[in-house]
Image 1 (spheres, rainbow, N blue to C red):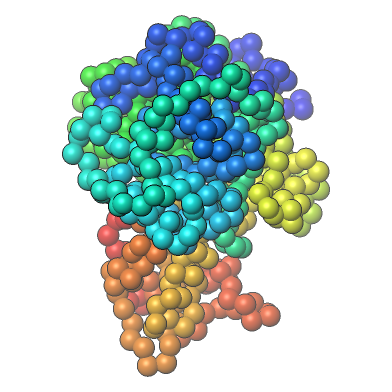
Image 2: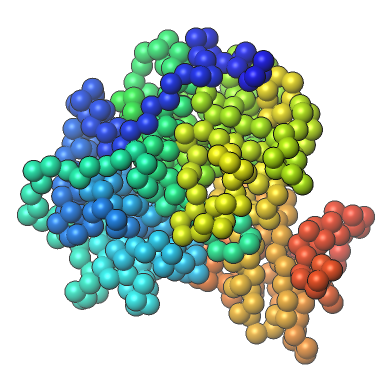
Length: 562
């Protein structure tokens, strides 16, 4: 069998099902046509209908066009989980612009690079104190020409800390931005191969790279999930209530939660942040039916002292993504709640469709499932990426499909290195068993995945190098019971410099890095391992750490949670 995992597909689903590709604004207009009066988004107990959402999107799109942010322009969104995100996500796309997601978790180094690299000269943000002060720095540094600021209280007052807007002609409130706007006679033509989103990702060999995700890539991913879940959806014939606590600037939440939910007329219950009891209220009181989370969320839920007495009966699907799910957490959840908590695999460059677990397939702990319809995945030699390896042999995971990025923005060399023909080299190391189930065992790149977010050691190293006591530093990932992985810094000191604690290091790095990037441990060494040509070697350091029988002397152990 060409695709052995297909034997476990849901009944009636084939691997070669046709996969739709179309412009993203059409996804919303189709949903409005079919489900206009239904609630699309619920936020702070306030419902927004599909028709109401489209009206706000068209006002936003008209304002972007009036301001000159249409075809061949990049618009950056620096937003958390409020309706401002989907309104302006679809609005900018309908105007023909490219979007750039800026993560509120990032430090200034990454954010400045993303703005400069993408060419975005306008940022849309919020007056929340967690966002606006950083966004104002973009203006101060001359990185952008205009800042459009949404006002959080427009969605109901909940006492979130806010920052007043300074008097600056380059700053405009969102209300002013859309005031008096009129819709155009016709909307710009958008092609399926036009870049819809520059979603930044990367490894340790430089700054984050902008994966170019086209309209067709993203709608193909939605269509792939659509085909996969079709039989179960038809059998239920219900309007799902989908919890969205995952950040919408992350590809998992964007595609798997928001776009897929809107495609089928479901209700997106939007949470501004993860709070265990707020999520449990959504499940137990509001009867949520679908909850996609990341491992850190499931770890928190699994740790509830009364977990076995909580009411999960409304929940039809509990999924985990973004990072490997600890098997012990899945076991606790199944034992105490009676539900299987399964994880799939995907990545930014695949929009993020890749693998999933068939509902009625064999139980294979540690597996990420089988490849989804329309996607081809194989395993190739680490030495020769054109050589496909047989079942059971470990190598690099390779993928192709209509959901896979066309490459990296402004980086033709990195793009060429990432592909063998039309097959993308993922950097993940794993194998496939005889049933077509895939297993991940390592990562080729040095990237750390902490709590579902990508953390890049080189960026942490760059920030640590600004410390006056540091001579050299290597950062690697270490196991973390809560995040899956966290960063540990190995440092050699300048002559005469004194060691410092992990808390002192984290205090020094605060603001330079995002909270999720801050190291949780530090160790000082007389020297760090090097390659034959004298470069500092992460690989050798990891090997040393693995082979050490006894724990090394550390100046400090794990610090507080970020």
